Length: 194
Image (tube, rainbow, N blue to C red; front, side, top):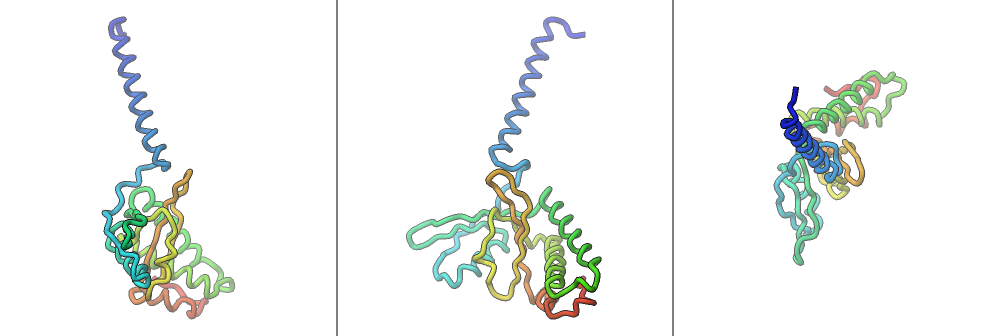
């Protein structure tokens, strides 16, 4: 049993613990996410001119695990922070992709078409790329990179809370994954990429 001298000490310890926990929770609340997204990739500068090369340069920056700071002749324009896919977000992305793949494979043959084949091919490729960490997370959609070269882009909302979003971006090299390129023309009755 605590003595009367020990009571203020216990009360002080309890107060410190409560304040520490409150500060910890407020730090997360200030970030508008219920978890720590970790540090973004280091930043590299990407020139905005010539404009025709910007999509390829952004694409290369993100795939080389960098955030991109767009710069022009007059100075910095904007920074696109990119993060690796890890922790809670990685688990959620894998679960969602596995569920989509399983649902597509269980779909009755009569309901399959070129769109369902294309979707299955894309999510199978995305699932494989997650295993090799060849994906990145942004807080926005980037239409700029979607039309670049012999690549197929796929994105999925991982989390949204208050004014922040976390979006998984996957760049699928159509030479590495030819079944993604061929999916729309494949026989929907038998198409099943592995």
